[in-house]
Image 1 (cartoon, one colour):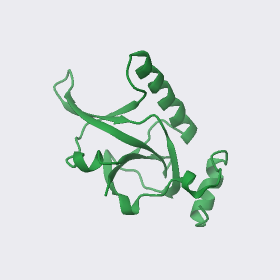
Image 2: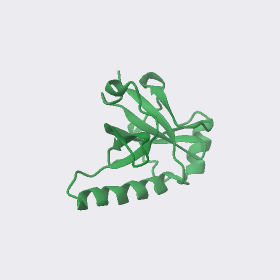
Image 3: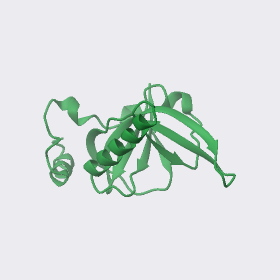
Image 4: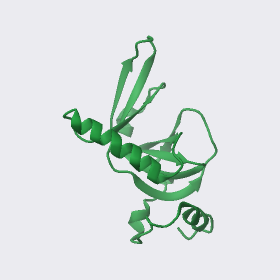
Length: 145
């Protein structure tokens, strides 16, 4: 069973903001001759890398709501110019909306077990991508999404 990560998406006000940023990072990767991807650098290195890379995703919390995910493609460790170890999470190019769920802020990242991970909204068969984020949030609170 896959293991996932939870992370606050600082600087994004919506899933569309995150999608725009990911699309820009993918274009930069392609221009450099690499496969399209985005990445996120974090200080702490996950100890359960094998489980994360076995189908895991990075779930993004946007404005207090667990909102989207990106597939984890790779995890690389490196030492920065300041001598501090860091971790680069290599993420797939697709931002997948998930059933919104409220989450409190925290620092760093947290593990998320697959059995409690929210389902993808596209899996419901309904086309809700065009629905405003506020409406999706209200429907999720009512248990309708």
